[in-house]
Image: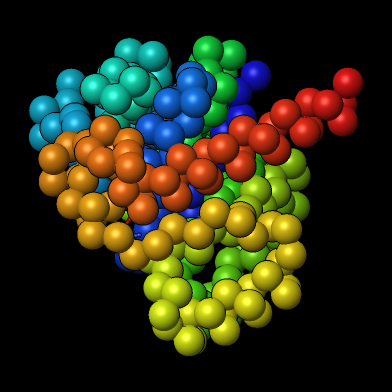
Length: 260
Ligand code: ADP
Ligand code: MG
């Protein structure tokens, strides 16, 4: 059964979408069967996957509202992974869901019949703890938290960890932090190095060893509708995301060995 991983951080601009899309593409290259789910009304993950968010017949909006099964909204991204696309309609879905029963469990229920078809289901979350993010966290087995090693980052991180632990009780007892990934990292920045050191001190091996550098190729790729794997896999950003995918796949092997 595929592992569902939400990419979440309540802060905007920390590299969630960049991580979701490039991790999906890098895992697809390993090769693993991957579904990327866009739960952000901005639809950036959809566009960056090479799918036009303005021309969707069905999207994660209809899926959340149970107006169509997920399978009917999924499209094939050019880079070898499947995409449940999203766009601004998600805002309307969120409002309409407010009064519905089991409104946090919609995505989980919609993905359940598909799990067997994938190795990884990666969910890109919006930058808030909205009902859309709650749906992602209710559906997920694990959360990957992208973070920038800045001054207040650790504070934000501990409030996110508190939130996840609180949700765990109510929404999804199986939910765990899969890992923390350092994004837009600049090795010449002393503060970034200090924050990174604190991070590993507090969170130990929850911190992925792969560090995503600040790399202009990563910022350029979405405007070509490509992931870094398609756009420039030999760039520093490309190597970093392929490394992150490798770490995740190795963990999966380790877990299955322990269970055998
Ligand atoms: P979020 O989804 O958390 O809001 P994004 O992934 O959209 O964050 O990233 C915010 C901006 O930073 C985007 O313009 C993106 O292209 C850029 N960006 C993200 N990661 C990197 C990186 N490692 N190097 C350079 N630019 C990056
Ligand atoms: Mg985003």
